[in-house]
Amino acid sequence: MRIFLLAPLLCLPVILGVVLGVPAPALAAPGPGQGGGLMGVMGGEVVPHDCAIPSIRAGRVASLRSFHRATAECADRFWADRFAAAGLAYTPPAVQITTGDDSVCGAIGGSGAQYCPQQRTIVIRVTEEDVREPFRMNLAHSVAHEWGHHVQGLIGVLSAQSALYGPASGDARRLLNHRLEMQAECFAGVFYSAALDSIDPGIGWEAWMDAVRLADESDIHGKPRNLAFWQNRGYRGGATGFCNTWTAGRDKIS
Image 1: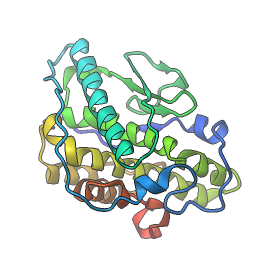
Image 2 (image 1 turned 90 degrees about the vertical axis):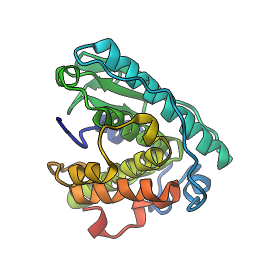
Image 3 (image 1 turned 45 degrees about the horizontal axis):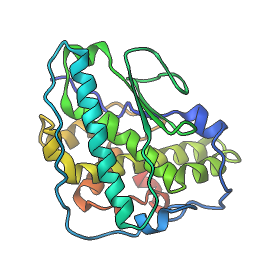
């Protein structure tokens, strides 16, 4: 079983160079915009989110496309429900599934998943390795993590982070990236808390967490142990209020 982890990326040239929102002196719980209602939720019973996510046939690009579309529909319904419960406006992202190297916001990096905030588009590239050896949890995570970035855009976190990133430098910029990516991981965990059974991931949760902790370190994303911490926090908590990486200590976002 092939496992690659944490390759999904925010399309950084777009967010850092183009998407500039209302400047904010700090990103606290969680920044300007709609976030207060969503990020204030810390409790409540996790209600299973049933989705019809199909099986995958190795060697078939069409089968992977169907899986990604179904996972995207599942994530869309989940987050629409969460925003509605918080009394917030929700708009879905566009989803681009491709086998090429280009997206609506430029070349696709990493393993092929990225979020283009200016276009509000999640881009998923189906790789040759995915076709040969599809692993459901990896594939689902490409969607879940990038949807987390879309949620950040809707509640004002992306524009606030961008405003802080501009005047920052060096280590401060690196940690701002980590806070952004780890919150997206936590939002993915919140989604999994309700939809994991429908995803039928092919791996137990603790084994998945072990795999995340053993992944290669990414300068943009931060230490794998902290990425696992935030994804697990979202999964165990089952609510977005557990995902405020912006006031967490350095030891949890380095």
